Length: 237
Image 1 (cartoon, rainbow, N blue to C red):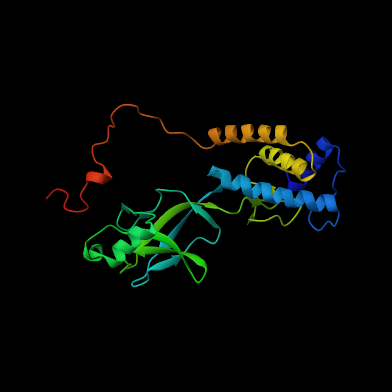
Image 2: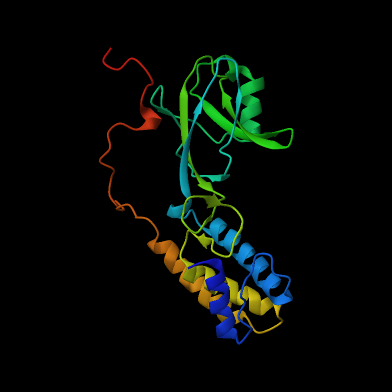
């Protein structure tokens, strides 16, 4: 279902004139609906780590280079997915500013520690900083949520913003309709509370169904080797 389909469905339901187009239209109502669809899509994408927005990337480190670019479509990390694939170890982090300064400025800087990471800005652009500074070519990997919540009509391109009436969202268009509906009602000064509650219930249900859930073990863990109590080297010595 395209974004134009979403707009037309809502217009029919609310008794508004059905838009013939959105992108490039100068009609005030169409401009309003397009803006609300954009806002609703972005807000939905930020509400949950949707499986359809999950992506993965790798970083190839260089000797003496401490920071690296994030993925071009990066929105946010999926926690606990950062790994040093060359050395088969998980990365510490994200390290908070206080801990980072302790590592960089205190006695810890001379101690042998696992590789960690922190995100901070360089000239206004977010970068991922690695500590200790890499001294070799290694492969680091992480998963993240993309800011590209749309696809073009033939699914050949991912998009962060609506470029054509035929673009469509990666997540369930029904959820997008519900989110747009209450936001449009609110913008028109109409009663939107019931529509917002309906959207909230359905979105929470969709979040609960998204992806898969692990089995919860309420007893003792069967794991014997844990990251917290396992040495990094010297196995079998």
